[in-house]
Image 1 (cartoon, rainbow, N blue to C red):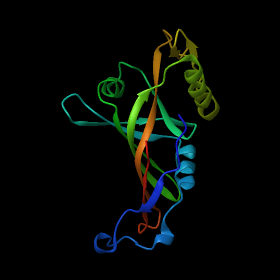
Image 2 (image 1 turned 90 degrees about the vertical axis):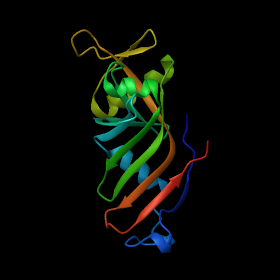
Image 3 (image 1 turned 45 degrees about the vertical axis):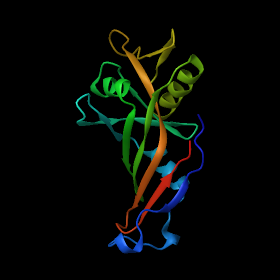
Image 4 (image 1 turned 90 degrees about the horizontal axis):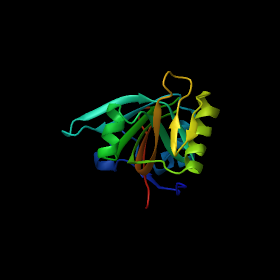
Length: 174
């Protein structure tokens, strides 16, 4: 899936913005958010437990066709949560932007798509996955554990400037 260009807008209106800036010139471009995602060494993925409570865990992330992707073992808490409820929030901090991304996580399927995500992890982190029988495996670990890749379909994102005064909301159309 290729991510479309979102609508960018101020997060706050003048009546509710204090202390945030409401000058439209402070709207951050989506390219800045993509750069933040691309350069983030680690992010935090928040998922929903079966009883509705939130769960957050650190994750390594890559971008594939503009969409953030994460890897997890299917039996992990986040893996079980995503298999049951795809709603997720990914947060990353950068030098000039802190980013909160809301979306739905979909398990990546098909050898070509799996190989694309695996290649992105290998390039960014040197983390090599072997793709066989429609599944990703980490051969460097005992037992060659299986991993699932999840692509987060973006719904909305929020960017907060390092100045503490600027905020942008991006809304995606699906």
